[in-house]
Amino acid sequence: MSLLTIDDLVVEHRSPGRPVVRAVAGVSLDVRAGEVVGLVGESGCGKSTLARAVCGLNPITSGGISFEGHAVTPLGLRRRRLTGIQMVFQDPYASLNPRRRVGDQIADGLRTSGDTATRPADLLERVGLPREFAGRHPHEFSGGQRQRIAIARALAARPRLLIGDEPISALDASAQAQVATLMRDLAVESGAGLLFISHDLSVVRLIADRIAVMYLGRIVEAGDTAEVWANPRHPYTRALLGAIPAPDGLGVLPAELPGDVPDPADPPSGCRFHPRCPHVMDVCRVEDPVFGPVSCWLHADGIPSAPPEAGRPGTA
Image 1: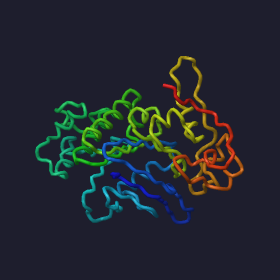
Image 2: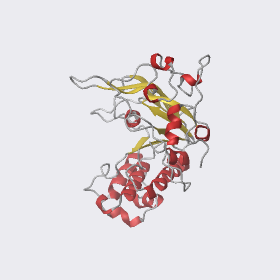
Image 3: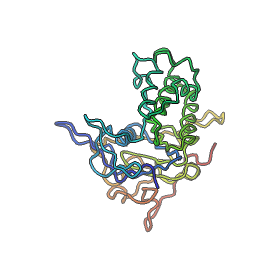
């Protein structure tokens, strides 16, 4: 049984006098206990909106989100029952209260979970920080240290699902893999599920059991990490892999995906990726390929396919 189930989720943003923005346009996804699922895609594809909806921070338009068999409802003015979901946000400084000591902020989570045996310093030690840091304020730490503190605070509430919403994008390259691996290890160790959101496929490859690739509000490809990396089937997935720099010493720049992500308030007809796809066919312009683990007409029965050009599958 899945820990988290997202079923045909639609999230729209409405503003007076402006067109409706469908940030999430029919996404289905699941996360099991002890599993790490990586959600990847360019900026503006709807990843963070999806994460906020899972936490109840964004109202949903249609579809459903269930956690341990119970529907996730949007947060309101009234206090709701504990859901067992915690999020680590993108900016660790903005997510921590600058006026309170980090130990006190971690203690809030411990009180919420009813844990009277664990001390804030214990959790700091667990994320690789000295115990005496509990008495300091957030401004006294580096970005990587603050993100570790944010992880410790999230773990204090004993979540059964941990969500990382671009948790490494604000960090130095030297700290990104460390923090990502730390989140994976701590989540798996506790038996929790982890939904890790990033635009960096190379880091997601290190920690995720499964990958879901998102483009303009839709999941276009999903599967086991090793399989997707070795044999990317959707042209967008191949383009993302082709954009990863190769440490081969040849000095060759990675391939650039032409064009920009279209406006979600005015998405293209047919396949949403077709204006940027090197293998576009007539059917792509008029019919939306919503089917299977790969939403692409190149992999539909009875439709002639153009020979795909692999990005860099199978490279280390």
